[in-house]
Length: 456
Image 1: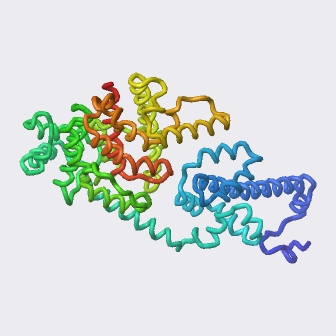
Image 2: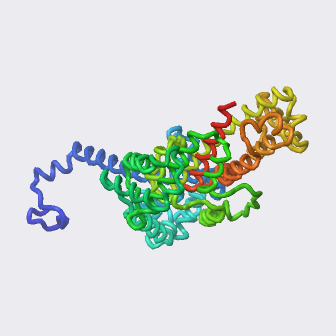
Image 3: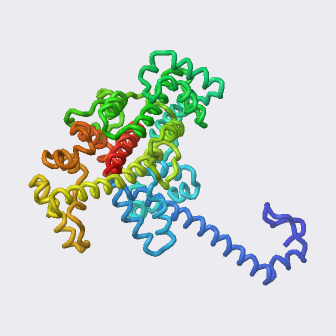
C-alpha cells in the first residue's frame, strides 16, 4: 500500500506500517469481531424491543370486543414470556387513543412497522387489527383522529383557562353578593341566616380553580347547590319528603316510569340533554374534574374510591366508570343483605317463593341451578338477583306494607332513586364511560340508600 495514500479509502487517513500491522493483528481483528457482534446484539435488542412494545399495545385492546383477534394474537406471543404476560395485565385499562399516541411517540415501533411492510402476511397475522389500523393510516401524522384530539385538547384547555381560584377576600364578597341575589332562595341550610357564611367556608376550602370567570354567579350557584344537597342528605332522613323534594329540584323529577331510548346509553350528549329535560341542573357539574370532585368531597357526598389515577380525556371516564362499578357493587351487596334479613324475619327463610313475582323466582332458581352445575358453591337464592329486581321487591304491596315502608317512606321515592341509578348501572355493566352528571346522581342516591338501610 502506498504511503502517499493512493489506494487508501477516502474516509481513512493514511497509516504507517506499524498502524497497518496493528489494524490487521489477530487481537484487533478479534476485538473488531466482538464489537460487531455487540452491535448486532444491540440491533436485535432494539428490533425485538419494538416488537415487544407493539405486542404490549395489543394487550391494551383486550377489553374491546372489536379487537378480539388482536387479543388472541397477543396471547399467542405471551405464552413464551411470563414477564410479557405481566405487562399485558398492567396495560388492560389503556384506551385506543393512548395506543395511537404510543405508536406515534415510540420510534422503535415506527421503524418496526416500516420494516414489516416487506413481510405483510406475517405481520398481519402477528399484529391483527393494529396492522389494519396502520394500513388504514390511523397512525399517520395527518390521520383524522389527530385533528379531533387536538380540538378536544384545545377545548379542554380553553375551558380550564376560564376557571380560577378566588382568594379569601373575594370569597367573602362573592358569598355576600350571591346571598343578596335570588339564587339564595334555593339554599336549604338549617339556618338561612348562616347560608352566606357556610357558603364562604366551603369556598375557602377549595384548593383548585372552580370559579368560571365568564359566569361567576352561575358557578357559585352550582357550587352552593352541591353544598346544599350534601347538607340535606347528611342531616335529614334519607327518604324524607322534604329531602326528596329538595333533591328533585336539583337532580330532576324521575318519578314517572321512563321509556329508555337506546341513544341515552350510547351518546353522552343525548343523555345530558335527557337529564336536563327531566329537570337536572347542569350548573352542578359545570366544573373542571378536580374542582367537581373536591366540591363533592367538601359537601360530604361520599367519594367513589378507585386505585386508578385520572389522566385526561377518555381516561377520566374510565376512572369514573371503575369507581362507579365499585360503589354499585358495594351498595348492591348491602341491598341483598338488607332485603334478605328483613324478609326472612317477616316471612321466613323461604320468602323468595312467596314474596317474589313468579317469573323472578323461577329466573333466580334457574340461574342458581346453572351456576351450581358449572361448579359454583351453594349460595343464598338472593345472590342471583338483578339490580332491576330490588325496586320490585321493595315496592311489592305486601313487602312494602309489612316491612319497607318504615325505611323508605314513599314508593315513588324508591322508584325515583332506582331510575336515577339505572343509566349508570347499565353503562358500568357494559364498561361504557359515564359522565360527571352520572357521578353526582350515583353519589347522592347511593348515600341515601346506604343511610336508609343503616337506620334498620
